[in-house]
Image 1 (cartoon, rainbow, N blue to C red):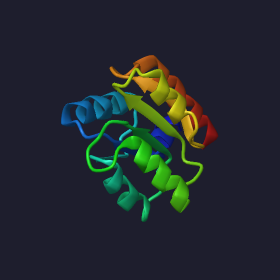
Image 2 (cartoon, rainbow, N blue to C red; image 1 turned 180 degrees about the horizontal axis):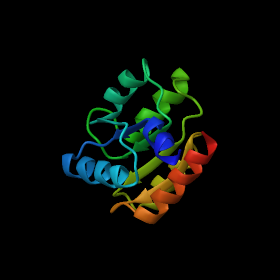
Image 3 (cartoon, rainbow, N blue to C red; image 1 turned 30 degrees about the vertical axis):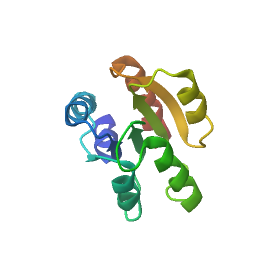
Image 4 (cartoon, one colour; image 1 turned 90 degrees about the horizontal axis):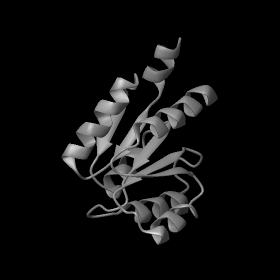
Length: 131
């Protein structure tokens, strides 16, 4: 049954770096999550969310076209997919970025790269239990 839940869980990965996309997708696959859609910036993510509702958003902050903060502002202002948890995975270790991220309603975790596998596993377990 747990395998069914992981496959049913839709994850939106918003990350502009191809290598990081590969690594994050691989780690999620290793945990049993295979229903992953990856986009390269916040604008692509907003377009995706107009027709799709993931169960989890994994978000980078520093991206071209529309960064992670701009994405969250547009998402909240447009009331798109409210209540969908967001895990930020970023190279930014600046305390001001973490503080700013915590002001957004759906942010449940702020992880610095490289991706903390154990922490991600705990977040996903909590998500599975809530489905």
